Image 1 (tube, rainbow, N blue to C red):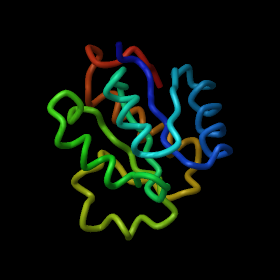
Image 2 (spheres, helix red, strand yellow; image 1 turned 180 degrees about the vertical axis):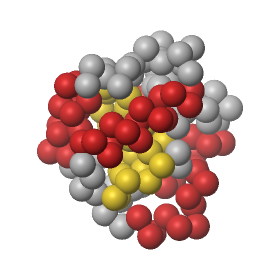
Image 3 (cartoon, rainbow, N blue to C red; image 1 turned 90 degrees about the horizontal axis):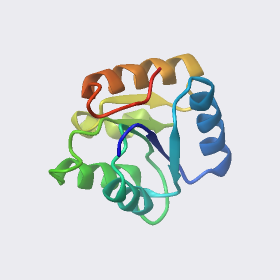
Length: 129
C-alpha cells in the first residue's frame, strides 16, 4: 500500500524534525536510518515518495537511489535528496526529483514534496500536502 513518505536519514533528530513537519501537514511517514534499510523498506511497502539524505553509513543515499532507479517496481517513486553539499550531486541530478540543501525550510520541503506527490498521481498516494 502506498500513501506515505519514507524519510531516510542517519541522524535521529533530523528524521524526527522532518516527520513532525510532515505530520503537521497531514502526511503519513515511515523512517529508515540508511540506504540499505530504505531499500528493504521500499521493497516491502513502496512509499509515495522518498526524502533521502545523501551521506550515511552502510549505504549512502546516492547508491540507494541508483538501486531504486534500476528496480522496475520502484523506479517511479520520486526521490528528493537532502544534503548539506548539493554540489556533490551535480553529475547525478537526473536521479532525483529534487535536491534540497540542508537545512531546508519547512516551506521548501513541503513545496518539493507536494510537487513530487503530484507527479505520481492519486493512484500511487493517499498522502496530501
